[in-house]
Image (tube, rainbow, N blue to C red):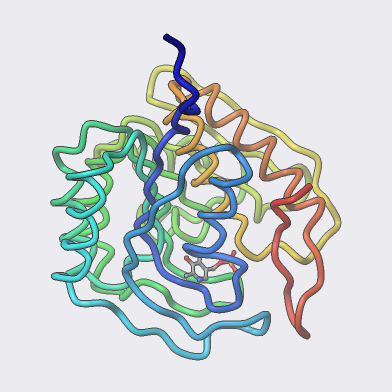
Length: 264
Ligand code: PLP
């Protein structure tokens, strides 16, 4: 007898902060997951008061609340991929790393530290925990060049530095690292490597300043693709295509920087 129950979409979890303006954080993650056909779930780590002008305030949740959300989701629904974003403090970085240490699903770590407006989203004393606890549980880590510099001490000014920085990042334990060179002038070039394979991903630069939420969107798209069973290089290639479209369609909102668009 045939069943009329539709097939369940891939289940993807974001562990991240809220952006009240709807452009980045949990909101960008869930929009990306919806756009790419996944069932998105969230473990909230922090709440930000935020708009197109920047972050006006941030409040962290207790570690107990993070643990409880995670257990509720994983113990009943289950996850086929996890993405982490803003974690705020060393305590929450350690808490999340411990929760993910035995998860049977790929983990995408976006080591969020500073917003495009220059607002700090990770305490300075949490960098060590990112290196020693969080990166070792990552299937793919996706630092931008500022995060790369903070984590490795290497200021990237060209493609050769990207290779050096990627090697240093891999020494902290992620299976793959995607160093995002989007802040360098010219083409948007990213380096994906696991220490054996080395893939340069290039996309034309869009002359659009409304790019709030780019990093969250890319990491979430990678998580969706991994949940669907794709290998890391193919997942990252497809996710980059998605975020390139979302950047091209980014739109003005408020009086500052608008968000990328998920409905393109
Ligand atoms: N707010 C939250 C909650 C985030 O997680 C992030 C990035 O991960 C940002 C703001 C910053 O986004 P952007 O640098 O794209 O402006």
